Image (tube, rainbow, N blue to C red; front, side, top):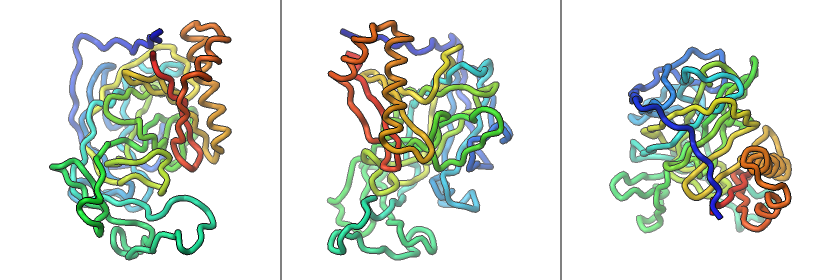
Length: 317
């Protein structure tokens, strides 16, 4: 059995836009001036800064820490109730440095299991919880700066933040995640994945940022390997999709993402499971009994972040 979930067809003629922002934002807000207007099916080629605002030249482009966003991008014809389909074509680290948090997010660890406190000035002056990393652009690997060369990990670049401006004047910061997308920090937001986002304003108003060279499931140390990225995405449009939150599709999986500011893992799992049932029953006309049992028999439940986001990942076959 193979479930078919067809992405919106791309126009016969599409353009590629190359742009680098001069201003970055810390909120998903409809109040920000549009960075670029594109047609559905067009491709955007740009650069993001890291979570502290440093670009590919290690020049700090923002005054504060906290996931600066590139955008917003206005997609012609997008209206409330539609969905943006953001295909991640290419993500490439564009500098040889990055950083992570230092310790796994577990409370009340005994002293012998604690991570040592690094140099408070090793990455950003005064930040004593950041560990510098070396990103080898030739071997496509990363390792902590003070570790042996063989303590390295294959890069798997991803976008931590992707989303749209929510309805009305609501302007959430780029720290939480919710029905608009946001700081999802899901390591499946990577090349080959198409992210589906609900539209609340004309043009969609797409933002993204917070690039990671790699990140394990759950973002267990509070970060990925934070760095700046070269980003190429293609954005198409699905009319009257009426999504209630972010989704994703790959060649092998369909994915419902559960996210809520300050939500617990149980709460966001309820969101993701409910959305997957809607997807199967309302949109794909699967019988309710079969939809429940299909999820029970074959779904993979991902802890997206320890801070509370989850996902239901269902094999297409």
